[in-house]
Image (cartoon, rainbow, N blue to C red; front, side, top):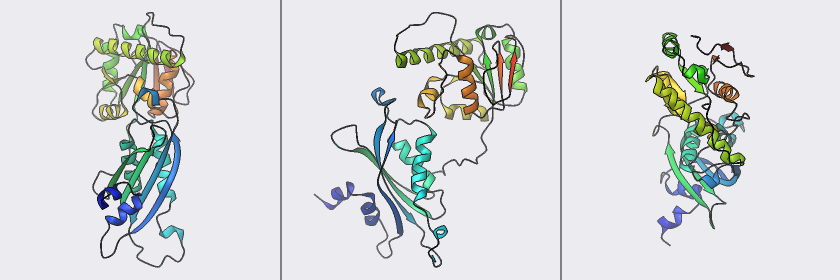
Length: 306
């Protein structure tokens, strides 16, 4: 086996050493064989199932410019690595190890001592061997990860019952939301039509979510300002650019680490969960009573203009 091939399967610490400066290799801290159970994967059979992930991470760090004096505050703590892993796994359910590795690397590189990071993640339960990815990222190569303190839009979430969707005042409702100068996201429930009944909880949940999305497209057909949106990235973009969005819930609900306890058939409760997730300033219910939530709620008639 050649040196290059051998190094390809070595621990990231050996990879980091081989890629270091010949005269003075950088200092490094590492995490080896850190196992965590997680729900991750793009295949349907992976959803809703915990599988073992193994993390191996090496961080090249700036050498200390003064004596350490055995002071933990003068080094990059190992907790920086484990907390980055835990944070990104808890943020949302992901399909790709590549996405998880990138986010972990970005978060570690936020630490002022970190220069370069090697991240290897392996799935231990998907085959006869370990299936995984490894990435190398250096400070300044990629945009910094979004920090928790970044200023994110805080929308007004408006739930429309089916009478509100078909109301003659829909145009006036949208006019008022546009004039309010605040991002607006619309939520709907399923249409008042029969839907398939499977007798199986997981498949029924999918069907009920799709029924909500079908009704979102009905609302979109009523006014071109109503744009159906499924992902958090699209929602953030729409809020920043003044676009009114209609939430299609399947992806965000199914990808949520701590998903809603409410059934998709309880559209009001699902809208409240979504409004809390988006850190909405208020939840407006058109044609439905106020659900249980800590957010400010206004319950109005179906055709009322908020």
